Image (cartoon, rainbow, N blue to C red; front, side, top):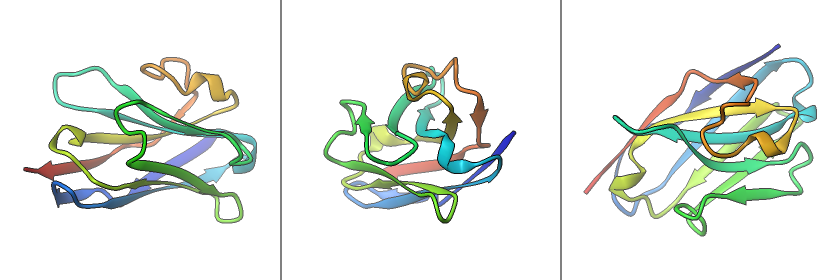
Length: 125
């Protein structure tokens, strides 16, 4: 089992920045691929970014490419999502995810094994 706890969400103006953190406990964090998903009201959950267990491979949704950066610190059992140049359409609940397979970090995450509880990000115009 892996327990994931997100933090760092909040209210920010358009063009601003936030950094989300995902603290993991339980089984070996460094053996898992990590990802971030988000869900806006009335919409399906969507994949945002993913990172391999080593941190050597990262992927981004087109909607956030060039603005968001995913990273991880295996010594601290923590994954991060740095969000810059935020837009009102980035408003959503952001979820941290962990899975043995990087390929599961896609679409709506239906195959992901572990989820955090989510953190709200609100971007005002």
